[in-house]
Length: 158
Image (cartoon, rainbow, N blue to C red):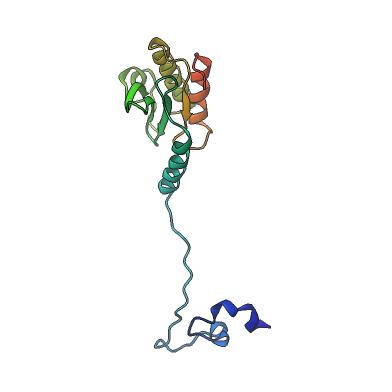
């Protein structure tokens, strides 16, 4: 019964008994190795972002609101993908936001709300009312959600 359940191992040079009791002689090491796919969190996020970008595209009528989040900063751009042009941007690296909040461990939800407010005002000044939200592969939670909610509250339509 045991040998029938391991029928997928017939192509290897090992018998079922050698799988149960590996040889103690180092001249005959096991040749069957199982490895898991190793991917980093950044690679996983990039793959999610690529999947999202297949569906979300910025047009002149409805540009893409792209979010980038790092441990220390938060950045948002409104992008027209057909012309490959950035129409508006806001970031925690800008002097107005950086001086307004005193954060050392990274942007908080309050900072994300302020960035969302600034990007919404900037878009409305330029006549942009509707955008397509691109969360950049990040979960819609925490800072990303706070930024999106603040932008909606100040007049942007997603």
